[in-house]
Amino acid sequence: MKYVVEKEKEISELASKFSKSIYLPLIVGITGPLGAGKTSFVRHFIKKYRESEKVKSPTFGLLEEYNYAEIKIIHVDLYRIKKYEKNYIDFYNYHTEKSLFLIEWIDNDQKLMQNSDIIINIEILDENGSREFNLMGNSSRGKRVIENMKNDWHTRYIVGF
Image (cartoon, rainbow, N blue to C red; front, side, top):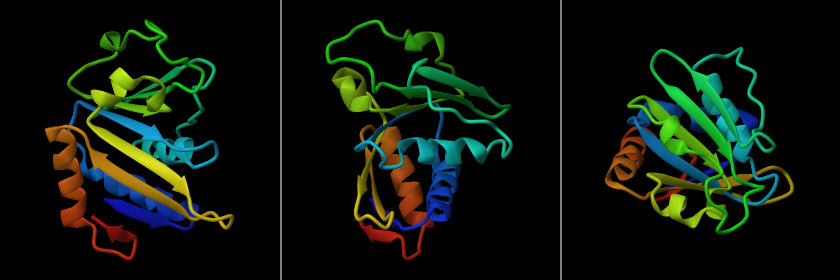
């Protein structure tokens, strides 16, 4: 399912819609070029749970964790991970029934990417800030989330299914 966003506010709206459609536990991989809006999407998503939350990029520490009553968000950035690098994070230590993994640059770990529930690919459409978010279900749970979004999202942001 594809969404075109033109403003930061629309990324926030998409993150809000996504937050209302998820089932836990869930692994979401986020791909796209530098500056596409991966961290921006994650930041808007996390702020749906606590508006005042300080969300920082985990590029250097690899992982940031955000715990709320209803959800445990694990924000991971694999930008610095090299292909075939192993044992950089023990994901099992962070997994619970309330876990949501949001993993930027998931394509740097093909095995993890193959085992994710949803892949969100973000592309830069133009220099004015337009972005295309392509959400793809990679598991039955992920496909159910996408169906929830399709059934409940009827705005001009929908480009196609």
